[in-house]
Image (cartoon, rainbow, N blue to C red; front, side, top):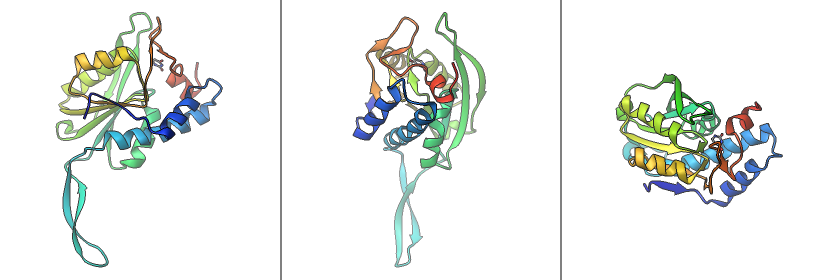
Length: 209
Ligand code: URA
């Protein structure tokens, strides 16, 4: 996969515009995020390894394609990653799920870890880390560090929006981790928010301030 894939599908772009609009309600924002997450998941799983198995259809025996290897692992970077989780899980219901809790120190913009619970045998799974906003890239890079420390070797990163600074940071820290996103925005502001962006993704999906 390329290091950065932008999913330019018209439905994704239309839904993203609705999400960016500050008048969009919490309920609609959450629903749109779930819907877009499925398009992004479709793209990020495009090259999953396949094998075949013999099955009986009502007509005959056939060698039919099936996913190879251990179940996928999804890792939500808390808390906003949870907004992507359910949609992806609908497509890949047997995936194992982990959580990494990182918050961003508002002054230094550096990630601080407060929680980590991961599926076993990460080294044998395709691991998809999910977080809607790739902003400075500091939290994302730190989360990927944790996954690698836990043994993961085949990692992908799924996000809704990316800033050029975050993509560059990830490319420098983890050039082996492909990123799939719905848009690459212009820049970060002085507080580390993506512009034009959509504001604080966690606040918008959970109705907090
Ligand atoms: N996190 C967010 O929720 N929004 C941004 O714009 C940047 C980081």
